[in-house]
Image (cartoon, rainbow, N blue to C red; front, side, top):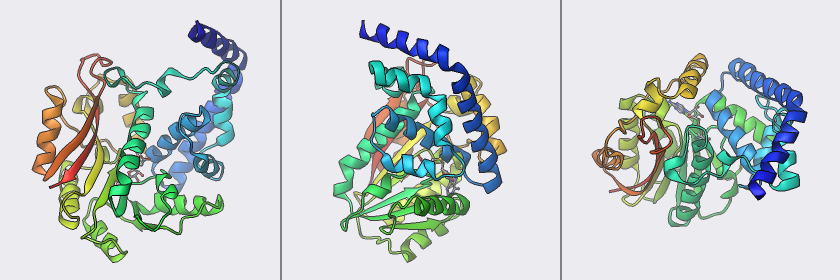
Length: 327
Ligand SMILES: C[S@@+](CC[C@H](N)C(=O)[O-])C[C@H]1O[C@@H](n2cnc3c(N)ncnc32)[C@H](O)[C@@H]1O
């Protein structure tokens, strides 16, 4: 009954506020595209923080720094998002309405849209459960993610690696928003070459300290060889028991026509100089495929969350989040 009431309230506001929603959406997305292109920053990193904005606004994930960040970030529009989501936000205030995609947790039913929100919450959980067991956190391809901001204590050293333009704009925006970042070492680097590891070490990374490597939605932009080199490097520079939190996309998801959203997105992403590359064949026994892949990189699976088995046309999973251990 409550769900029906909430949906009616939402549809009422969405009908009433449709022009405002459309203006907000067009303005936000155009601004993001134009400015990202002009500043030569990662377009896909901007997309992730839109999801984090939504999770915060619907009180599903507290991230006030992200709101401050977006208000000061030249490639996104806080007011545009407010306009775009005005109906859902009003319905939320009045009736507790929450867009379904934001709260989907049933792994099999997770779709090519709802996985974006599930992913953020699952990686949060993995980090929170493991951060006290490591001495260093390294975020590879950190984009505009702000998780490292809150680990401001003496016990964990934090490093972020990303390409120069994206990282420079992130630092500039954080400073403008008066968000403290003195505890984070920012290293600009390209994972396509192995200098990132040398840079990491020359910036204070200790090869004998247990580390958590966070590698969220980055591997899909790397060539297969680069993926191998990055995982081998992690093994080389960190002690046994170090952890790698990463995700995998299926070949069908990234490189076939089954997902029209992805196919369309691929063209957009390419126009920003990014490209979906690395994937795994998830058409048969995905768990074994991932375990085998990890073991060739001397990583042992600790946790695996396989998504989308019943939501896709082919009834095959398309996405997985993995936590593995250096052995
Ligand atoms: C989809 S975003 C994810 C950002 C962040 N991990 C998150 O989840 O919010 C992909 C990120 O990977 C970075 N990236 C892609 N290829 C890279 C490379 N070769 N070297 C360093 N960073 C890279 C991009 O700049 C971008 O910030």
